Length: 456
Image 1 (cartoon, rainbow, N blue to C red):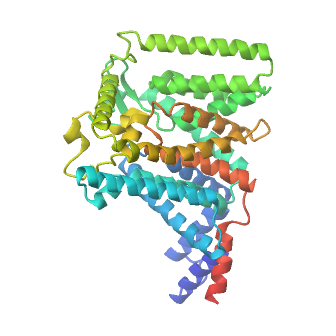
Image 2 (image 1 turned 90 degrees about the vertical axis):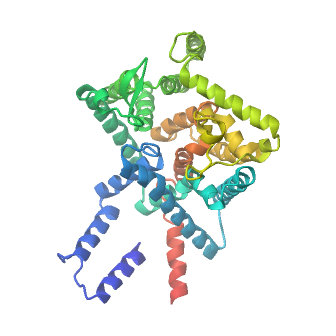
């Protein structure tokens, strides 16, 4: 960091700007902002808030706020790729690269290369369009961006805890206020991602920051179950519960939130009798949900329109794989929306690979691609297993979230379409496992030391 500051100072001196910090000109303001962001606590936490929001892809599919959407979709992955290229260069200088880092790169190269080639073979899609069709996979490098920024900002576990709790509580309060004061019907338009309409649910706001509210819920639940009598903990968990269970209309998401509550209680209860009782209650709960879901007339039944669309898409994919079994091994690739031929043109307007979970992934990447993708999940699971009851509460709360993400894989949009979320969890677990509070011997410092030797 000192070397970067030295380069900035040297450049500014060359253009005859002196006394930079005290200067009233643009350069002085830039240096002041630079110092504030990296060395003042508030500035560090502000950057950390923005970093976590982008890393967990909160606005990755929300086109209503175009600036945030563009930033999440293009800028952050490009920045992550740049950080990864710096990491490769520093690893070359050190003649050493970590196995996990190398494997992540291998997974990325294989998935993109196989998708580009297969989309060219089966659909004659130009190679450059094949790359644009897999822009979502570039979010895999968020792993390196998050880990690097943690090192740069010297993030400790308390910083991470405060940031996640702030994001979860602040977004929950704002979501409650928005629902109390605004009518979603007035803000709905065709294709909106923030305001949705359903014949059963009516008009409702979506909660983009619900993942942080979920982390807060498990964090305060852990504290209360372990004997906390602080009124603030009860107040905060009440706010989060109101935001999630009263105003969030995504029933499948709430189903997994309830599973997470059962897991949290099960972990923190020592009495075996209580554990057996909770297990019976949980199984009864799952049975009731499934029975309700399969009852005709319910909005989560198999007769629901969106469910029928998913079933038809799955049947179409299975029919394609039956006709051309070779696709089952390496997949069919993905077609870019910029291409003149799309999946919707070929297989129908409602054919969306991203809607059918593991079946869609198998169609896109094949069994071999699935093995590569799911290897990352195995690494994530093994990292989460190292978090115990003695670990910081925020990491235990994140572990519950990870378990729920893994449980929901067969039915959600799939790891490839939200890979930044999984890589963010992996980066957090890897960073705090490897460095403890924060790493003082980062690749950044090694890079700067060797760069100085080279440029002498």
